[in-house]
Length: 248
Ligand code: UDP
Image (cartoon, rainbow, N blue to C red):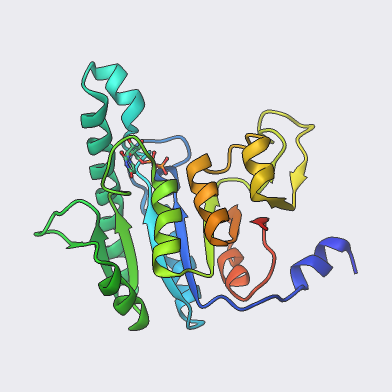
């Protein structure tokens, strides 16, 4: 048996509650603006494959397929804080699209936003979120932390700690963490397992430092892999080591 096979077979603790962080770019065509129906469907299928196993899923959505606060502020010559609020509102668009796609496929959902938008979705309430999860609903968490100058990575780490997730999955468009960008550098090496400190000290571009630090302090393991490979999420929830694992 190859090392890779042995690794993918190594069954660890089953995951009961998971937070899935999907960046805005995951909702669109690669490098494109806005939403893409096929991408939405693929994400929805992956999520449903996990709820069918009985796992509870909260999804934190990014908004980079529409805009990112810091760059938009410079482009438009507007206040950075305002641009960050615009970025948070962009995540709500992705959340509502994902909600409808999941429901069209028979999966019950709720969207909870950290910025109150009461006619479109619920406002985030921790205990209510947990109750929805216990009832088998996928909870889509929108508007990041509700405060400017941070990103949805930090929101995902915070949510994982707040709702007691067993695993934070960071979905990327490559199969894990590399020493350099494998699309640009052919000598980039795949990193199978990392400590939180290694990610921070080596400045590996996986998640914001604040997000990694939050997970470290509260012992939330992070799995980094691509949702483009079908079945990855199901395997991770079944306890297999998929992609790169960041842990103690
Ligand atoms: N944002 C924010 N506070 C948050 C989360 C997000 O101000 O708690 C803003 C920020 O401007 C960010 C944008 O929303 O650039 C979109 O989020 P993010 O960049 O995390 O999206 P992703 O890169 O995951 O698509």
